[in-house]
Image (cartoon, rainbow, N blue to C red; front, side):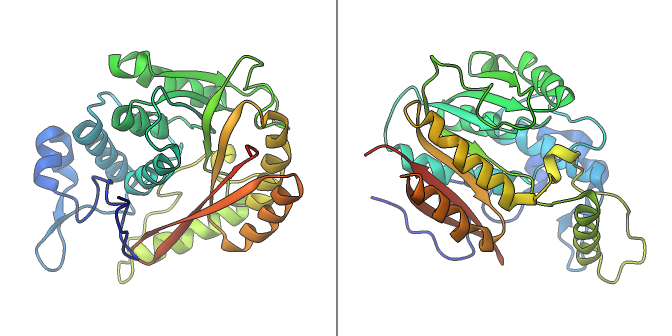
Length: 295
């Protein structure tokens, strides 16, 4: 029986529901202690505009819930919000029913390798994870090499052609139950910086000591691309039809709801059947667009 998901709540299978338990997290990763402080009502918290604090929190979450050690990212790379990333995994798991030996392709895995970590450690999925940035691949490989539970579950591929998404990553012999992707949202670095400033301002209302820079980090390929999310989704949709016989479900996060209808229109013209999954965390709503060419 499918579990009911109330609006504003994480998926029922997501272990990150509710407030962070900093006592448990700091027990697993003692270095988190130095970032913990009290909020105005006396509860433990951290400064969510401090990139070092966010990275340390992620280390603690990944160690506590996924038993992964030595997780880290290079300076300036994207530090993902773990609860939301886990939600994507749990929602798409419902598409796969009770299949075994699941093979997943993660497009744009980043230096953090977060989706393969969560998916392999939670559901036992096998991952091929691609990225266009050699530094991201190098760092993700370090994480895999230092964690035996990832070595047999995750393999990495460098996408050498910036004009392609699946081509050059999916070999002729590959079969995937599902692909996943968190597309670059912005269309330029300037747009990304403006959005980050708004985010930091909101996190620091009433605080004059606002930290500068991208509080969640991020390189070009992680945050922006020409045409932004809409053009990326269009390219992904058109290229996916070339691999219709090798992939059962294609999926992607869609941050901007205005990009849903144009993408579905393209996919339906190509003969795909589409499904929209809505995820919510508090006031924030994210969407996963899933499609298949299977009859």
